[in-house]
Length: 246
Image 1: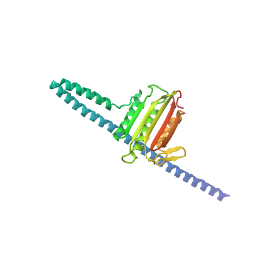
Image 2: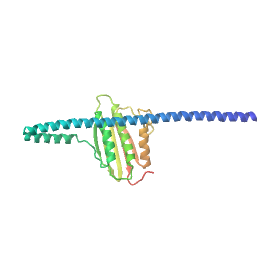
Image 3: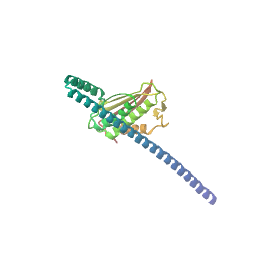
Image 4: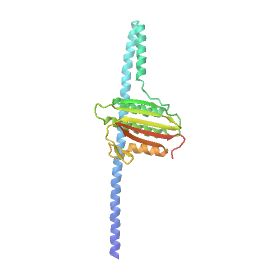
């Protein structure tokens, strides 16, 4: 009887040791994944900031050139040429003014930051968005959704073969008292699915970005649909404006 008790205790100790070891392994794996994910976010943020700095430097250089040209026309009394140059400059500024203005400052910031990165990578961008200034949906949650969707879209475009047409389409608006978010992008055909869920190609499993989007949509009892066909990946999200997050 005593030996049975001893072996039982030893078995419990061994099992506890094994379980503790497995828990430590899982903890290390999760910590590493979180660290990698945070490092990736920092890299993307730095890339976005650098892109904005490049744009500012480009605008500064162009404006100096324009001012010098206008001063030259003015000094020579070439008022007709100066007026023509101003008209051409006005047309040029109108053509390059592709800033998305949704009506919500924070959403403007995340949208224009991500779309700026896409344009710097020669990805064709088409965006139309309207977001109310005040709504029951957290702006932080919206930034999580939009930021991750656009990060995934940019990465999908970058994985395409050289020479392929790369594009991202964004549409955000109020439909039937719900906030509708639509993002589509060109992509290669290396799509991975597990049941009805899409898997991150880069991570080899359901990535943190997709998980964060899923959790936010679920929190608002929203609608989420992902689909791909003929080299195009589409994500549609609808969030009720009359519901608070639980």
